[in-house]
Picture 1 (cartoon, helix red, strand yellow):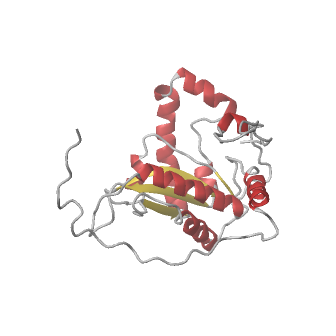
Picture 2 (cartoon, rainbow, N blue to C red):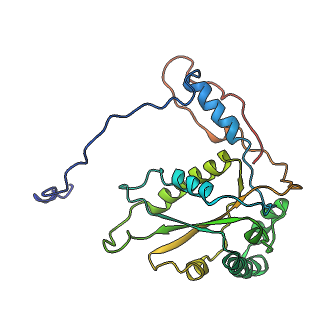
Picture 3 (cartoon, rainbow, N blue to C red):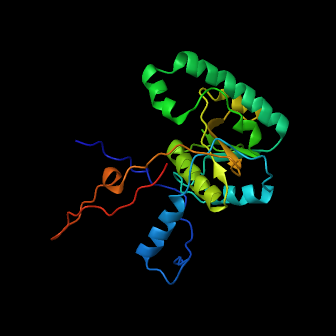
Length: 250
């Protein structure tokens, strides 16, 4: 039997927020939802992870708009447990690279299992991370383990929330005509020290942002097709059908 709830469990809770009408979004009124969804997919299917960056400048305003887009992500109890530290200072980028490469050398020489090394080998990655200095911007994403002072309250589903925000950030960067990379040196504690972040922030990912180098090349990869990533459970006759085509590079 379940334990009865205390009589005062819901007493004196904050009132619900006021509501406003929702304005439906139709970016391309000439397209029905299916066509609009396909158009978005076709744009995103051209996104690639890039390790060869140009040092061509990118305006701070461009980065600000991308971060604003990331900040639209949903979050547990609307706590918005993220911080986007945007770095263009060459000295700071140099310090981040030096510390990251130290961790990466340890990873490749000692920490990584044989299987991990085998999985990484086709991608051509190693402990050298020149993109951390070449890219005009590094966006270092931190997750908040509690809300900012003076409240210092609880946060909920912070990793899920920050992960969603990072996905939107990557889409915004791509939409701006720029390229990016998700870099996760392990451990990442040095980032809080280098960037003078408070104790309640934990590094989540480093995202170099910029234009691709003129001679940029990327691995010839293929993404999983829809029938390998999606399962549809529908009612009625003809409910089971093979997903449509759609597979591109990673």
